[in-house]
Length: 192
Image 1 (cartoon, helix red, strand yellow):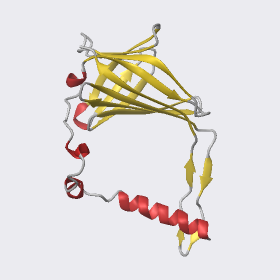
Image 2 (cartoon, one colour):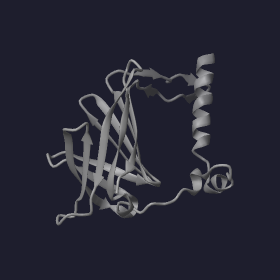
Image 3 (spheres, rainbow, N blue to C red):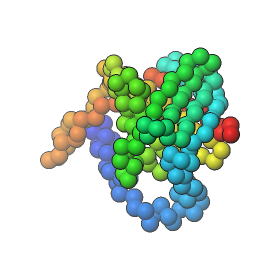
Image 4 (cartoon, rainbow, N blue to C red):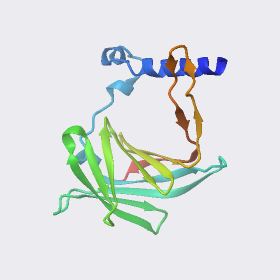
């Protein structure tokens, strides 16, 4: 019973957090997170970036590899060249296309029949996709003089399920939580 009350309390807090309005955020003058510069996507993002990709695996060990991101002006077909390089020889040439820029909907075309949807939220281009029992979420954030990259990898066939209890006249929803297998992050500094 105590466990169910804790879960219910957490769910109530989550639902209440979703109700924060813009006026409440504007009152927070202690942080400039709400007044950050708005970059025009993708034009303000065009350029060459590089840095170190820090990789944390399941054992909490870390390693790193050199990472580059090159975003070009649109080509004749309307794609913005989007090239990621890991190390010296792992080069992945993609194309960014605008699907519905009014709502921030873009797509990264791998030119091999894979097209990954991405969504612009503020200065973040975020995509989440599923491949072979794995969920991957990538967040590219445009910042002054560079781009922050955060990548999260979880296995979807291994999870913990909780909830489902009846408390009073309400049923607590089932919640599945997934282990984070790999976390990667990088600050890629603009080179030109």
